[in-house]
Figure 1 (cartoon, one colour):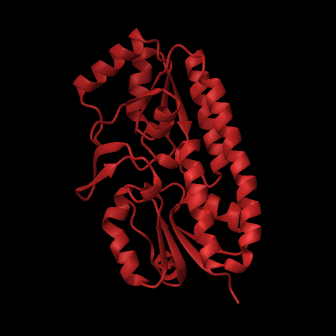
Figure 2 (cartoon, rainbow, N blue to C red; figure 1 turned 60 degrees about the vertical axis):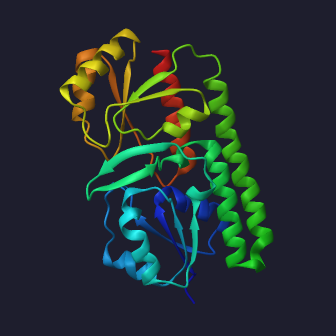
Length: 265
C-alpha cells in the first residue's frame, strides 16, 4: 500500500514534513524548485497527487495560493488543512503580482529560524493527528529538528550581535522576517512587486555608495539584470541565494553566513 500523501505549497515545507514524519508520508510539492511561487500554476500530475492527499499545508500568503487554494480544497474537500501563516506574526506587504492578486502579508517567513520553530511545531501536531500510532516517533524527530533550528538561531544571533552596518540590499524582498528577527534592515530593489524605476535605481545607487553596501542579493529564480546594473554602478558583488531549497537547514545557514559576510566587506 502506498504511503499517504501530504501536499505542500513550497519545497521548504517538505523538509519539515520529512524531518518529523520520516518515511511515513509521500510529499507532493505544488511549486517545485526553480518555479516562482508568486505566479506558479500547477501541473496535472500535481493535481492528481493533491486529490489523493490526506492533508494540504499552505503558506497562507503566497500569490499563487490566492488564485488556487480554494480550487485545491474543492478538488479534495476531505483532506486536512493547515495554513502555517495563521501561527506567524505577519509583516504587511503591498506586493502585486501577475494576475492582479495582492499578497496582504509577506509570505517568506520560513526563512527566519524563529518562524521555523513555529512551522515545526504546527507540522508535528498535524502529523500526530494524521497518524496517532506514531506520535512517539514524531516527537523524537521533532526534538531533533528543533535542535537543528535552534542551532541556526544561535548562529544568527551571534553573527549579527555586534555588527555596526545592518542594512543589506536584495532584488526581491525575501528576507524581511530574518531582518526583523535579528535587527537588520532589508532594502529591496523591487517596489510593489515591480522592477525599480530609473528614479528608484538612482536612490539605491546613492544609498549603496553612502552606506558602503558591497553585496546585492538575488533569489535563484529571479532575473539578475537590475541587480547587476546596480552592482556595476556601485562596485558591489551579486550573490545568489536559494530561499526555495528543499534543504531548509543548509539554505538558511548559507543565507545567514552570506549576510554576515556582506557586512564584513
